[in-house]
Image (cartoon, rainbow over all chains, first blue to last red; front, side, top):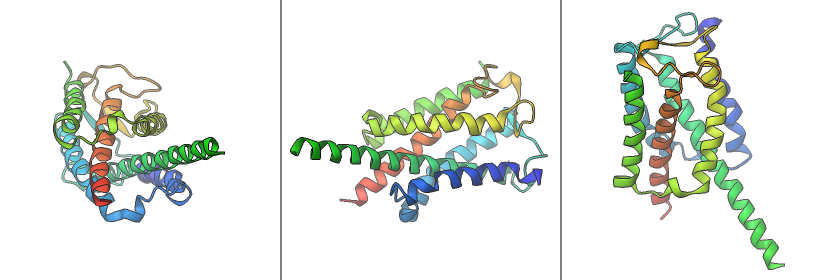
Length: 113
Length: 103
């Protein structure tokens, strides 16, 4: 079970941010094609950085907590990380936008009365 | 200077340069962006803290390649620059794509 720890942590991140889409109307998953397109530069740039970090011995991964599936030298979990964390950030950004809009609407309604 | 430290500085400046000289979305001047970043950094502390905890690390850092400063828990401070660059690049591209689409 330990070898899924990194993946489970990522699953937890997706789970905890899901209400931002479902309740706060982030509409990130709803625009999944744009979402994937927006993630593309990040996944490319940061995968290259990750590979550089691994080859140059900046960091390594604990074999106890990863599946062992690798994309060349990069653990699969790192690719998942470069997808999941930016998705969480997009959901956060859009949810904050929703909340700020609601505050503005509420304030303008208040000033009309 | 340690290599991870140097690469982090380049990434942060690089992403800012992408905004200033290329995408020009203006989101770095919005409350929406900075409030989102505060939330992202808050959650980063817990997730990154779990990934880097020295008692049972998932990611292991070679001491010679970063500043050696870990805060809070055992998080190398360079990770915040890494996170800033990764998240900001994504938000810049997303903003550019979605706000163009709407027109």
